[in-house]
Image 1 (cartoon, rainbow, N blue to C red):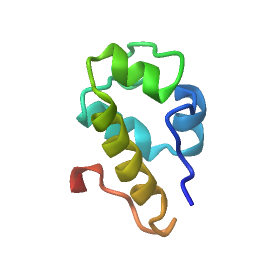
Image 2: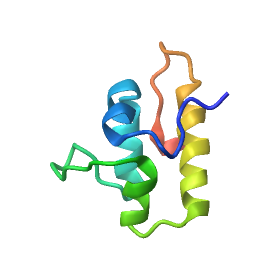
Image 3: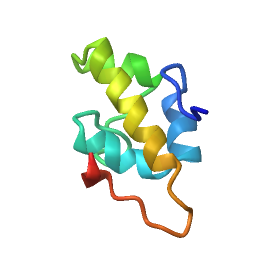
Image 4: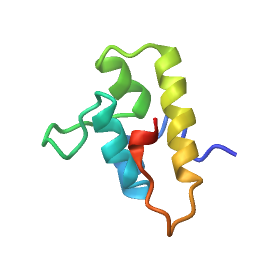
Length: 80
């Protein structure tokens, strides 16, 4: 069951899934760390950076895979 979908707000995504900040940054979607404020949904943020629907679907697959890791295991966004 997917926890993260393309309509999730960036604020909620980063609050509920802190690892997503590093993942998004490494995939070209600057998020909080660099100080570039991002509002709206994951889909909107990715589209604003020129990503296509297939890229967004890949992000969702990878983010949800990271979300499934045991909480005591440190997710490494470099996996993807």
